[in-house]
Image 1: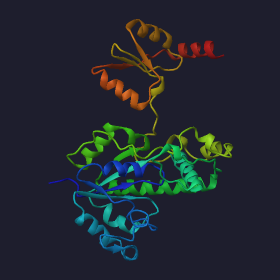
Image 2 (image 1 turned 45 degrees about the vertical axis):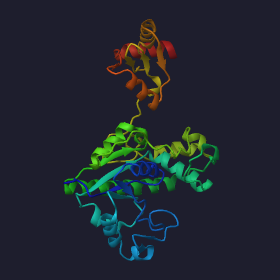
Image 3 (image 1 turned 60 degrees about the vertical axis):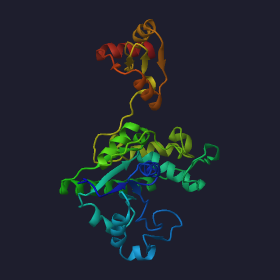
Image 4 (image 1 turned 90 degrees about the horizontal axis):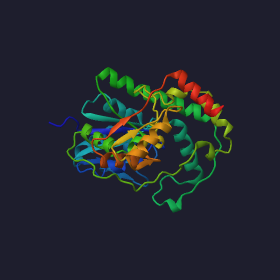
Length: 320
C-alpha cells in the first residue's frame, strides 16, 4: 500500500514553487493542481472552477474541493499552499499522515526583492531570457520585517503540527531545485516509481546578480540584515542555516582529485601539484561540478587544514 495518497507543497511567493510544480508534473503519476486554496485564484489565473466546484463554493467551504482533488485525480494529487491561503484547510491536511508534506524555502531577502521586482514589472514568470524585464526597487524595511515575521510564524506552525503528530517533511531550498539527485530524492519520498532523467528548464531565473544592485536604496539592505538573525534568517524547522558550498573555488585534476581550498591555506602548492598530474579544471558551477563528478567516477575530494596561527600569519603576509 502506498505511503502517501496526496501531497502539499508549503512555500511562499518567489521561492521557486512554480518551477518545483512544473517538475513534479512531468513525473508520471504525479499531478499538482497549483494554488488551489489561494483566495484570489483557483489553482491558476483565470480558472473559474475546478472539479466542478466554483471559487465561490470553495470560499464557503474548502473541504469538498480537497475531497474531489484527492479522489478524482489520476495518480498522486497535490497542491501548493502559502501562509496567506485559506488556513481552514490545514485542519484536514496537517494531521493527515497520508498527505506528504514538502516544505520549500528561500532566503527571505532574495524572495522579497524578487517579489518587489515582479510587482514593479508585472513579470511573474520568465521562459525567454530575451524578454526579461528588470528594474531597481526601493527596499521597504518595515514591510520586509513584517513579512518575515509572518513567514516565521507559519513555519513554526508547520513544525509544531509535524512534531505533535509524529510526521516529517521533505525540505527543499530554492537552490535544490536544480539538483537532479535531490529531485529524485523527492520522488522517492513521495513513493512514486518514476524518476527524473532531466529537469524542466522552461522557467528561467528572473533576477540574477547581487541583491544590492537591484535596490534604489542599498543602504536599507544593511538595516534589514541588522534587524534580523542573519544566521537563521528563515527560521525553517531544519534549524541549520544554509551555507553555500565553495563550488567556484574548487580545483579539479584529471587524475580524479577534487580540492576545496580554505582561505590562506597552501593553495599554491596544491595547484602546482595538480598541474604536474595533468589537466586542471576550475571555475565550476553546480552543474559543471556535477558533470565532472559523473565523468570521474571514484574521484576523491579533499581539503587541507592549516594551524590557525599559520593561517593568520599567511593572511597577514598576503593581505596586509
